[in-house]
Length: 202
Ligand code: GAR
Image 1 (cartoon, protein in one colour):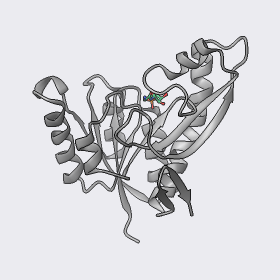
Image 2 (cartoon, protein in one colour; image 1 turned 135 degrees about the horizontal axis):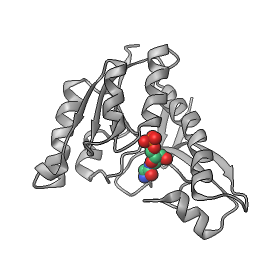
Image 3 (spheres, rainbow, N blue to C red; image 1 turned 60 degrees about the horizontal axis):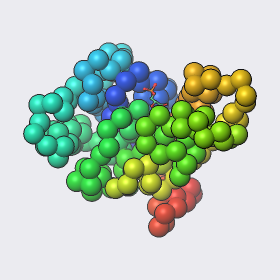
Image 4 (cartoon, rainbow, N blue to C red; image 1 turned 180 degrees about the horizontal axis):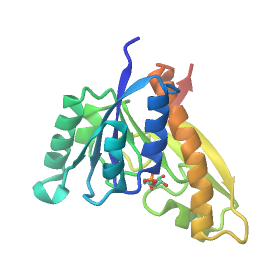
């Protein structure tokens, strides 16, 4: 089977991107690295990408008159790098139905909560404020909704009384770094099948 090309959309620190890229470099994930695209010129991930021999691009949303035009620019870069899988690794912008349609079943997102609980921004804070005792993270395919796409993997994290936003985020991130590479690995091995709302792992 031809190796899949994995590209990344990022907005910030890029720790999830780094973990996945390292596993591709080491061969633990049988894939090739594509390109890194950010909507934030200051994203740390843009600085890290060349360390992996990857091109990194800041596609500034302010330069485009519509969300679709911004996404068309990203789509062009992704296609130029023959992207098979797009990983939204801390990408903080909602992708439009146009973009989702272009990469249907080929965009994986990592979200810091146990979906369908706490979708959208600041999921760790939402969980703390709600007072749930268990939260976690979800690797899922992106569909047209906000964090509503078919779930690939989830991991649970206990919330203790002494937990703060920082301590909880660290615990969740540790699990993100475990399940996101696994979801990417399964995709690249052709083991994920979307059946309705579910993902079957073969
Ligand atoms: C991660 O916690 C990820 O789950 C979250 O942003 C962080 C990015 O960290 N994503 C979202 O909240 C998306 N709605 P990273 O840049 O170090 O990977």
